[in-house]
Length: 444
Image (cartoon, rainbow, N blue to C red; front, side, top):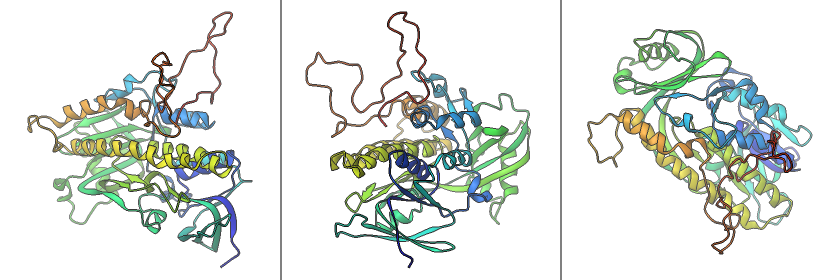
């Protein structure tokens, strides 16, 4: 083993969650080692995955001076056909959903890393770690293997390494939940179609492919997603290929025409909803974030948003702990706050995933012959504040304290909730003040 390198924090996983954590922690003055298994220059490492950033996520990125380059490349969706919550966004300057493929989000984050405080390894895999209880300054030892073998010692370890997280499994953290037999296909590329309003984020109701996702992407691309039903699967006993994915995308859009000029990426995956029983282990020396802590369908496009909220929530609390500026109980709130939100998302996601595949939830007591799309639309409308992130809130804890017991104290904002945007005016002329990007603040 080589002589170990030492850092304040080691992060396993160089996706958007890991990159955002590294970016924030170095801004707070910490040293970081970031380890990524994939080669991000290959198609496997570049295309696909998450695409949508909702208003609250954009506000958080704005606070971190990151949103500008994302707005330059992304596609702003203010219309969503069938589901209307995108037309109901108010109280924020980001009154839209920004569609930007993960590869571009990652490129922006990598470019913004402070390389003086961040060591970045790609094509490097974490094969295990140990946490010593001897009171040493760097109790976490991480073993990584790539072209070379690297030994890393740090004060803290964060697993942002996806649904098959090595960190979660090595820490023996149970991943509670279940998987269904339902399968979905997602395919991205440059397309030609005679479907009207083809640059609006929408859903197409079909009797053969479930509730079809139609998402305009950055750089003129489009994502199409549909249910790969048992009836469709029976047509292809040899399995799914790119040709199958393209042909069924064409079929699900009928009677409109569709032609793929380019295929950038496609995938077939099973739907599951799972959450780690704890998000921190080894006396708050090891943490997990993003897909390492929770997985669900892409039906509500919440995966990347939830992971970013995890990263923002953890980073400032961990930095305060490292600098000795907070009580240990503050770090405990990462798990309690984020688990409460994720549990709500999983409950909601189960209903969405079923309804998008033309199945009614078990709790539904109405007419079982009812159109699932009607109930799906109602659920999306009811969950609009949660979807956009503007209505997410945390319960009272060591951070979120009530303003006071006096009934006269009423500031209009409950502790643990997002403070709404306010219009500022100059005191003398009452002219509107234009706040610079990054000036909006609120709980994360």
